[in-house]
Length: 120
Picture 1 (cartoon, rainbow, N blue to C red):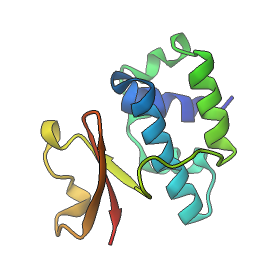
Picture 2: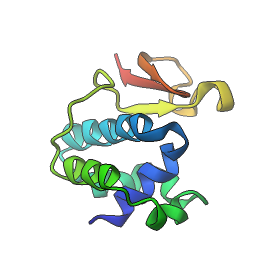
Picture 3: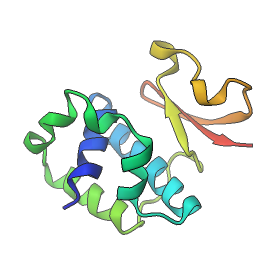
């Protein structure tokens, strides 16, 4: 079990429920495939969720579904529901993401409170 990946999913999207965590897992998988890195390497360098208060509770939310999700992500076996997204943000709460100040990314979908993006 990769605790960093689990903590990231919980920290980034636990409040969005399983579908929200699945969508974030898809983003991690898409980046891993694009950058030829493991999901663990992606979350180590690109996600803040593993450090927040909710992530610290990850050991308490190890349901079978979430553990299976982490396993599928680590094996790069997820069916992508984000249409190729490599980034996401809660735009309503935090505004347009800083990484896209020039608005060169396109919105691929919205799941829960998260808006998903990919490069043009």
